[in-house]
Image: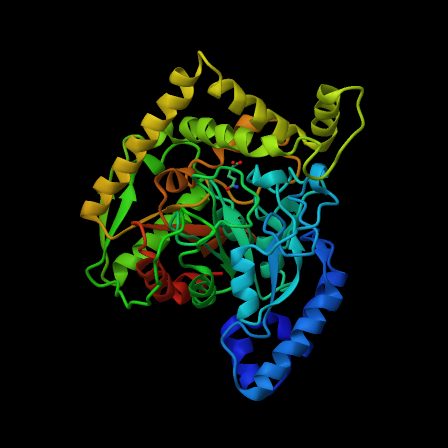
Length: 472
Ligand code: GLN
């Protein structure tokens, strides 16, 4: 039996029945990682993982263990694991060692999780393809000439390639859903505030959320339950207890935004998403066309707000307080050299855009305007959710692109986020699940819910899962 193919649920059952140990599981994944050429991991903590697995095995013998105990996972390298390197895939943090655990890590460790290592990403989570990593692009396990999708590229790829049972990612404008879609796994971007951001290296603080990537909807649910909830270290976290609910497809109202099925959407992707919607209809769901009239402004709005917040958040990397520090003839020279050598091109581009739109004279024209548009986008969703329970739409307009295909064209890359970013602007939860394939490339279906409606999204996704996947 190949232990690395098991889901969390199956691995937990095997551990319960003593068919194998957590050490067996951990060794199987470590072997896979060693043989891999996907570049999904930036660091692997073999000894620590095996020590944790031994601890988990003791708990299992005592019979005192939960669903995640002894199950090996991987963590996006923007989430801090104490005493481990946390690079954000940037040269500026290449040798930075985290001094504390993120709250999500504390929670996973309490649950007995075994962390295998840290996964690759677009530098500071800025990107949608995984190619902006200072340490090389992650390859797509379904076609190694293609991207895994970003920014949580390593987290998506390692789960799809059985190099970890599940992974954590973060999503500011699609970074969990995009790699989940490209790699053919399930990813959940939780409601803003549902999961603590404490210990996540910030990109756009009003947009960022940590969330799970796993092989099945059920696994995603298990992880979400473990990591969500109020945290006194994150004032934006909300006292919210995930409770499973069984929502049937019969009579469920599913909204399909007419503005999303437009030029630029690949025909085969469109067909896969429409077939998925049809399957929900066959099961008794009522399909309604809805309108999100401000959808066309979402990209412009996001690419003002996200870089603004990024420029403020990244000001801390000044060559003095964290990471890379270059010598200079005076303080300005230290700043210029450390940031100049430490940050990659895309990060610099975002900092420049952010500082520009926040500068006096432009603030009202760009930043303030974008905040107003953000409210309109939020209202569009609020109105839609008066009429429908969930929204179904694509995750990405195209399947995974070739590595290098769009690297010289930042705007073409930004356009790929057209279906994912509104969700973050509105703070909503959304899931990407495999819906079909174009050739060997997986394509995801996106299910968006109203705030804190994760249970509705997850239970509907679970009902559809086997019906969509039989096509693959
Ligand atoms: N692709 C988007 C960006 O570049 C979203 C990234 C993310 O969700 N971290 O900003």
